Length: 435
Figure 1 (cartoon, rainbow, N blue to C red):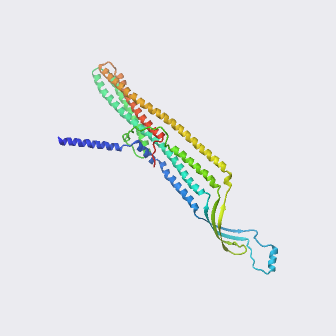
Figure 2 (cartoon, helix red, strand yellow):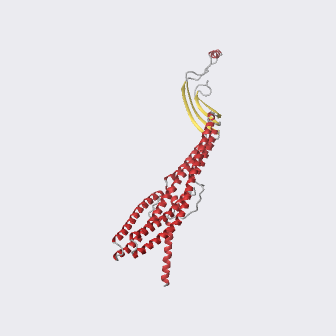
Figure 3 (cartoon, rainbow, N blue to C red):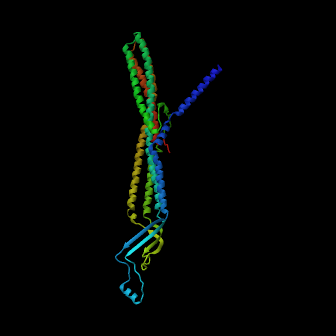
């Protein structure tokens, strides 16, 4: 006896462990959000954005390195520098010979080096702009990815809803089949007609047809959700039914808000760039060359030479349009603020509607329990009346169907409540899954 009890206890423990493992194997809604995000091709853009930012900053930093260039020139000119005729006569009279003048064909090859000392802050601003552009692109990608969650939410709850409806429909079929056997005995005893039995059979077939349609819709939904998360969902039971979560109505963490902030930061840096374009540049320069003539134009033949010093450049062209450019940036910033206000207004309307829907479903669920209780009581009374021969089978089937409809409506209300709560989490930014 003790040995038998030990076996029973062991089996119960193993069964509970299998149940726990099965629950762990289920996919949660949050896991589907995360998998859909990781599987979506757009996620690869994050790496590209970071690489572009790194490349742009590295390229800007290299502008501080000495810049070298090699130039060459061969030319022919119609005239060259020479002395006035009277001066030449004076030189001849003095007996001075060997005075050379440059030829009309001239040649020059030079290596030029330049080192920026001060660029007016343009390279520092360019690096800030590279970071700001990356931030905007990153937040825009996040906005696009965030839209996935609503699609996953819809697919997930559609599958759950169909699964619950199928379960309820199967219970309905089983009850009809039990009634079929009962009514079959009534027919044999002359209490019911053969047509009553046929009505039950039709109801069973109708319920099985609905089950076939629902399984088809469910299969399609699982295929689409599988494609989103990159993982095959073979059984709707693999999806866990979510638990109720805390509801918060304020908009606090939507990626669109971070995008608006990043865009404003981008405009601020663009405004800084307007000032840097109007600042002077100072650089060291050095040139080593071989020319004919060289620096001494009166010395013929190829001659090496060197030039070095400081270079100042100041382009005033940017100052002419600075005010107009600033006004254009201010208008763009105002447009971003308008877009932000529109987004907040529209989102708040959605949250208001969803809160109203949540309260509606809670109230409906309270009424559903009462309706089901009444429908069950009516059905049981009808069953007794059929047995006593005071009610037709058709009327009884109507009451059985009404009870089944009431049960299905409650299931729909429960899942619609959950779906609305989780959609509200998405709308108010309460759901954020980052890399």
